[in-house]
Image 1: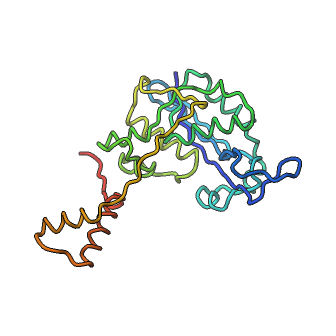
Image 2: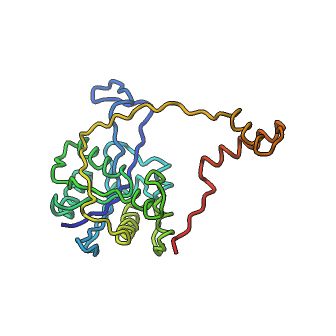
Image 3: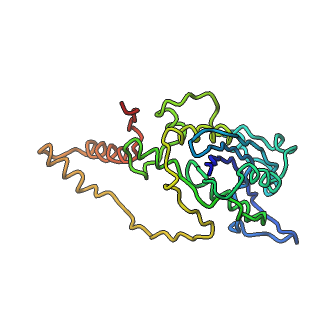
Length: 257
């Protein structure tokens, strides 16, 4: 049994008007996946030792160009990908790298595993050879630092907090897979923590009631604490401070110890 720690870079550049093969305009709400343009992966054995790596770029066939935003984020350009193989060919090479379905996928968040299955579906490829078990490492890092599993950290933040040397750029599938594998080695989650991924499962999310700030109650609480009425300027400061506090943008995290 091996762990396959993988990361994807993908692109989506839907034009304003989309035409089908007959020249008729297609509704943009039709299923269009984020097209995978790079797969990076690290294979670990059951003792968390790195045994091989995978890094392939992919020539896009769904969209005609890499969007400027993606190019700026990843450094990947349309011209760079023109000489690469298309997704079905790279996918077969990735299956060879994985080796068998007993392996466990390890990802930073759920988007990569979802898009991998969506791309195989779009290209009408057999995905039964992909591992069904996975471990989402991102919430495990939050729990490691005593945070809620819903308080998700960025990959770079996790790398910095765990004192992992930064010697490669982020937002590159090969580099991000390497960093994720180094995090995985430090956390060493058990094989028993792996879950089953079902690409056909439809998750129905309950509609949450809309939340609003009880401004009057908030101000009254502060006036009670200070035993006086607040001016309009003070009320505005209290409300602004309350809203900014809810964003958690000024919270600092420090490595334990």
